[in-house]
Amino acid sequence: MANLPFELREFFHLTFLRHLSYGLTGCAYAVNGGACMRFFHKSPRLSENIKIDVLDQIESETLQKTVGIILESTALFSHLATQGILEVAAMQSKQTTKTQSWTVTLQLPEASLQTQIELNHRLDEIPYETGIPNPEILSRYKSIPFAAQFYNSNQMVEQKIEALAAARQGTVRDLFDLHHLIVGSKVDLVKPVNGIGKKEWESAIEKIKKFSFKSFVEQVRPYLTEEQAATYGDTPGFNRMKSETTDKLLEYYRPRVRKKQSKKNTQTLSDPPQPILQT
Image 1 (cartoon, rainbow, N blue to C red):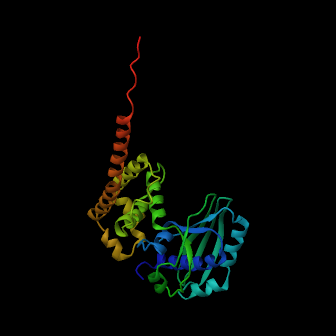
Image 2: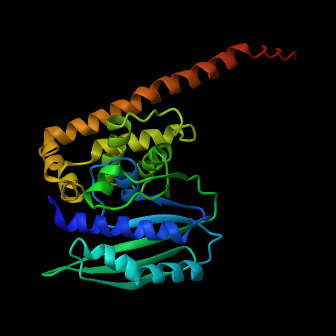
Image 3: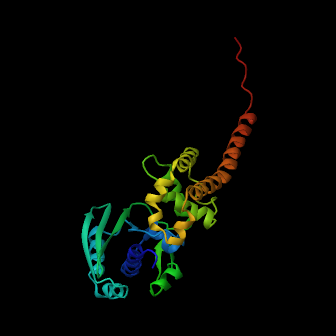
């Protein structure tokens, strides 16, 4: 394996998700973040943790019990043992009505790895889709296919643009994911961006321009395979990714703004003249 620590974490995430999907049958949830990008949108970026949104109708106590049973189950451990994981130790790191998380330690023959499970309760409806994780990943770990719920590509594009537009959010990882979606996977921007305003567009584009190659090396490259890391192994490669992303965003954004401005001007010209006041 090219990146053993992260791939063993990924194997754990995949195995845990399979068991959780059985435990949450009939419930509204969606895999989010890097795990969603990796398992359902063929991202080359490995993820250190797994994040899942759940509808708030699922009680915290029920979810806590369900996850606890999975993490202590013989079935989970038996599957993990096939990749050399000797022991799983889980500790509840946060349990509130909004967020529930567990820190999980994977014990290997000569080392240990940590990862985190994070479940976030959502009040609004979760617009999930149901599908099978990437067959290539399933085959790599000799995992049987299973169905799970996740956010589709349009929803992930919207999330990434909104994160980049937010003043205190948005990292170079969001840029990498957005580039993968709209440039690599050619996701059409029409559907996911209807609710994104002019200010958000401009803020997202400006933040992308400010990202440095150093931040990419620190935040993204360690999570890539050797082959993928070489693709963005220098400043020109990183700058190309930035320009391709902003070009794609502007390709849709500029005509949209011109159309709105033209409509506004037309409405102004069509307004009836105001009468001149007589004194």
